Image 1 (cartoon, rainbow, N blue to C red):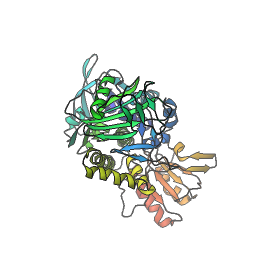
Image 2 (spheres, rainbow, N blue to C red; image 1 turned 60 degrees about the horizontal axis):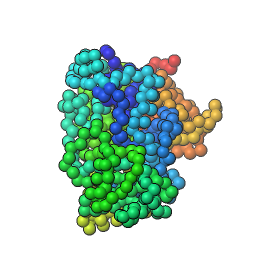
Image 3 (cartoon, one colour; image 1 turned 120 degrees about the vertical axis):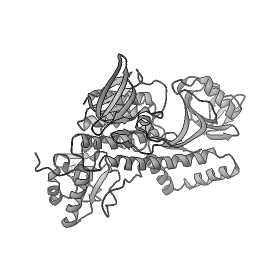
Image 4 (cartoon, rainbow, N blue to C red; image 1 turned 135 degrees about the vertical axis):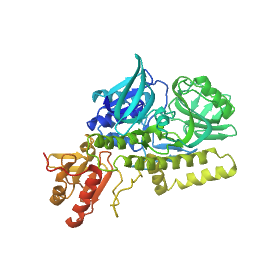
Length: 513
């Protein structure tokens, strides 16, 4: 085999997958059609559950240090209204203003540190598979060639050639919207008022937030005292734009003029991007030895969610592929990738389609719907619930067994742990991306029950001030596979622990090295 896994696409999803595979001892090969990293602005930052996962890999501080823009207040657009978490001390949704070009550079550096083979300017032209391997035809700078691997993962975007070659359907809806997003400076002639509104000579006041007209939607985000603002327009258009052709300031101003019916002078463009909205989800994320992740698997009709979903796909998939390649995957493990991440994609599709309904209505009934929805979000419980939905932190993966523990399938919280070596966080234990049995009650019976899996599962004993279970079995993707309730008897706790270990990590070894 030329590689264990061929990854097509060196965007954030593909690079994240490659790094996770290397942590699991697998040899990935990344093939990217473009010769250079993309410099056309796309996503403007990361948000949601992926930020916690990056913390669990020890990468979040590096990514935060690379940000040049201040972290914005926790206030997020949602279908023409806002989820405003500014009054909460612990918001359920966070964002990191990290432009995609910078994100890809950081992930590329990470891949280099892990000795990942990334080939740019190598375009996949065809792919086929049999029971043992996949074969990929590639057109590279020195001509065509053919390679093979155990698995092929398409992280090659909305027009995925891998998806087409695998014969996987991609049904859904295309919305007739063109969205333009910009961060620009304002000339001195434009005044940012104390409430965030703009005073524009000759045009009057342009209000902060969303302004809806007969010609579209205009959004303005500003901070008093700053001449840097975020601008957003949505118009219904039938024009087909080439994603590789960057938007210009003139195009932005033309759109603002059409939507608002007036001029808004702007200065330097710090960020310009244009995108359309589609709601599509692949029928299946796996076809034999070919799998899909990121935009190749799903497209969502709202901003701020695609990177979160795609990179979480990668983390879920990597350890399962690695277990199969190393010959220790239990039956059906790789199929859980589709079961879990298709479910997560459907949840994201649910709220992004709801945003379409909220933002695209123009009649009085639609205005009433937005007003009622915004009113509901003044209450903490529905606001938190919506934040968790958008963040992707409300996901509970389906777990085997008749009555799985309520924690099973959910993301493990970042507990502060007291150990014989001192204080440590759960996130620090997760840096190597290995499974963990975390004994929080000094249960020798549970540690002994797990000894047969000692080569694959790290066993830690610790105490915590926030103990909500006697022990937790945590997968490499930081989701809990099993938990023991407080003081759960040995005769019920140990059999279910062994069952969970077998389901997720295979048959036990004879002894621990």
